[in-house]
Length: 282
Image (cartoon, rainbow, N blue to C red):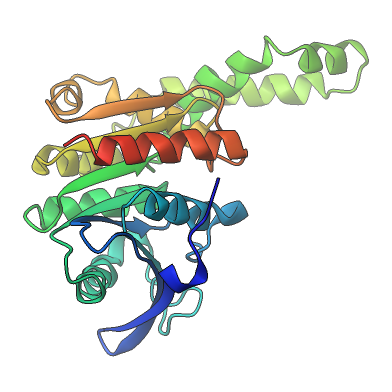
């Protein structure tokens, strides 16, 4: 994959509630009117695991889509204290203003988020629907104890039964069988537990409300080998989600072999190309 020259990437610093935030602008053609603001998950800084946000930004810019990736307060090169993914609205708003100021032709901004960055992006879009043109949410974070247990039972344990490495370790006596079995049974019990129903304001419900409130186009990217994605899929299969995700303009992209951060280059390239195609499709 070709990458843009250094002259197309520059540091952008901007203010957020008295603190200075730092980002990297990946410029594209001067005629570009739709750009992408990357909301990192983690918490981590603007480079991402195995430089995934750098690769994504450079690829999108090469395809004519400007990108800004930045550090929240308290992360990377930005000042201040980190506040958690549910309290970064001011950071996102400041980054959007800086993005527009640095890209005079920009008319639309799409938020791209991974993990709790995807959840933060959805919350922001729901609260500011007119400011956001679209959402790309990759493996959104909707973690609950029961949801994680269900994801383990459906994904991790189910996949392990079909892996030769599992049976080889079992036959060779390299596994703590009873410990593994106890863990499995404990997760099954958690997954089935209905003694304490999730309160209305639980994270999955708040995420559903956010998706419901935002009526712009959404690209949902899900990795097949990721417990976080598996937990979201389980939530999104509930009746309240189905009409929301089925809206015209919304699209789901499944990458069956990919992990949480698209750590192999072919997974990264496939995801990035699909995002670019989707961004140009409307």
